[in-house]
Image 1: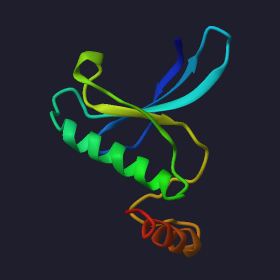
Image 2: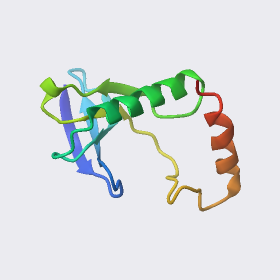
Image 3: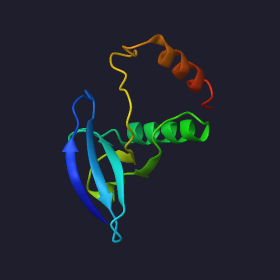
Length: 114
């Protein structure tokens, strides 16, 4: 497995967000995102909680990027996780800027997560 096109994404006040492609030995490419805490942060439980929340949301049918890997200390990458990269609109400032419809959908979908 090779990592190509690694780039840091803008935003993310409390953690780093990196986009990259993973290419296997057959040349199959998978777009991924790494969300991790800055180097000096020690909140592994926070990332594992976020990982489990995304996993539960996906299992409940909420459209979220599937999570692939929760980083472990032995990985040497710090605290974080890897998820699929998906195209879409980013919600900024806690609300969707274009229309209230996505906000209503988010509230409805969030109630499905248990």
